[in-house]
Image (cartoon, rainbow over all chains, first blue to last red):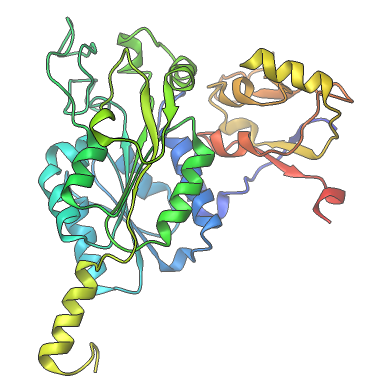
Length: 283
Length: 92
């Protein structure tokens, strides 16, 4: 049977289709990750009316503008504080923070580790494209050692953040890392994380061919996906001291931490109010 | 890796299970669906779409090189352009 040319897509019910095609470059991975997120949402059987998506500034921050549900595009680095407020005001809703590495672990790094420490009930999807993509490819806190960027033309002399280790050390209950090639495992992981309670982090390593790949001998998105295919190793429950991203070593991906039944901040806060006042919330 | 997959398709009997749909003018020609299709049934077109990119087209060679509706192109497409769905008789 030949290919059928149509005007709609199966995921169009979740999207503001009048804004498509989106702003992301050809070969960018954020679209694939958004697609996997919507598949995970479908697999987890979550009602989109019970979902709040918060994103910060950056290329990934644009996600909030394309989803046809309750979304908010916050100020730079403040996606997690906004989401904490939403979750405390509406504990019946699922709150998802969908943002980039520059937003969540660089400018918003302190909010990130303190939300993990307090075990706020959030699902954080962190799209790590290894540099500051939107502003032109400058070196960031997640750029691997020796990588070439606009501001490090002879190689980066700094070490990068080991994000799964950071989150696990701060107290996150679910930590996983995938790439934008492993979309099926990512969708499965998102579906699983929707049914956990507490601070859940899914780091997704994405390609930025326009600013990062072009300077590191991977000029288009396909080259970067082939790099992910050949240079990743799936290792569940891996030793998190070994998960730093290095250009000449295999990237460890998989599900690293999965702790059940750790009390969340919201549960404890409402429990305390109940104990002190002797009445339930809303009565 | 890709060679192994091609050998597999030659030895295992496969059945056509899916139909591929495309929203032509959304495609930006990244080529992910073409490269990572496990059956290798997609290839870039010679025509351009409204944005000036070469969109994928379906080249099936029955009995072994056919769409099996695995849905990987549906998930990996960053532009929400291509999707594969099982045929009506497969849904039952």
